[in-house]
Length: 577
Image 1 (cartoon, rainbow, N blue to C red):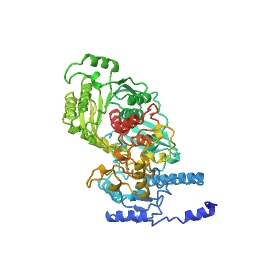
Image 2 (cartoon, rainbow, N blue to C red):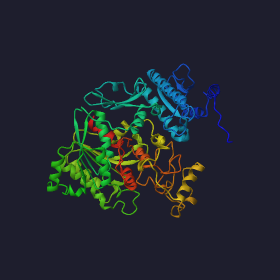
Image 3 (cartoon, one colour):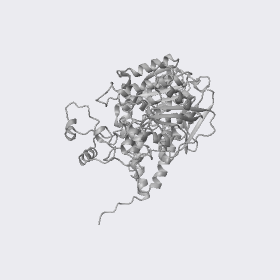
Image 4 (cartoon, rainbow, N blue to C red):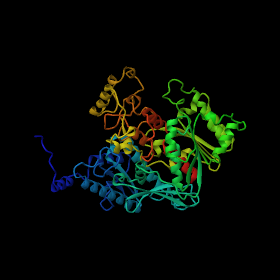
């Protein structure tokens, strides 16, 4: 008979838990060495302070906790999961640990301490951890020099008259610990609160914004907009399935306004069906944009344009994501010289004849290098119309998107002067989100439909994926690659690669279901990412409905081509607040 697993009794469990090392762990010693190399003097195990911080400076008013991922229940980390045996006990235990940790951090902050939590998994990348600790400690030194409050905020930030200093968005846990709130401060002094209930698995972050975003991604119902004071009329050109519109809608929710999409234009019928499913109040146009905007820049509106203008009426905000395939570095055929690149100028034509108050245009960074100079020509047109314009490239991982995705952005407004750099700094998250943070709970999701089912693979590709997992590596050796990818100095290192749990994912493309098109192999399973996982990495919440899509290629194309809603959220929040 097979040996039966031995049940650990309560006294034995208590003995095991008591034997867990509380101080001097290898992780703690490693962090101490980093702090020492940076030239800082510190004390250890300050028993007189809440939570007994592992590393502390009473004079500098800062503290560092070094937490083990399992015992402190690090949500989104591959090192923590609830044991299968006696799940009720462990769930209760982890919940208590998380509440205790949050309470200790809050008590320290009330005493004026700045707090950094270092997780055991952070030690996988020592260089990155050293940069994080160095930045944290440098900020504390800067606080002392400038004479600002220990929380790192100028004392004037509590005064509503100093709106330029004060952040426009903040996050906090409720007293019960059962929900997390987003607070947005408007220019008129009002506050707008958005509250999300969170389960125990969605808590565990010292940063409540992480808990809010974690819960937002797992929402199963879209928030209904009722009783808002103002309606924001939005047009989305080259809308795809609606990533930019989703971010604009959430910005409206965050500022107490009503989102009304008055027109959505795209040539992809499958993507437009998904858009209509999620934004049913919108008038959609499945046609070539030249059929709606056929006039030359600088000319009077044509008959088609006048008809289009009468249907959409006044427009408060324009969102646009012109096709990026013609500019993409993955396009080896018509890159920089593609007929689709001139579509960018149709956005400028729309602005010329409609004059929306606020504008957001996004594309790949390479768009500025197109031979047609469509981006610069469009910016010139917008500036001549009297808009205040800024443009630049942004890294979306900075604002919480769990993937390494860079986009070129043009913002313009008739009423506000905004700096892309300042906006990105204002909404920068405390820690970048890893791929596991977004998809860890989908590791063994039941395959009930197209959305939750990974692609089928050849036997050879299955062998390649199993090799990565069995050998604990993330890059496929050349000898196992296809012959076209075996050249000595090839640039295909990410192809047939495995996602790293502790890092943001590679840029999600329409090829996320193929191991040969990027680093899309699951961190812990011999398969590629599912459409559901790819959507999460693109920051589509579970409430966003893709159920009308019947073909895998269509689903992959619209998810891969979408703009993460966080991009439009932060800029629209600036426009509206």
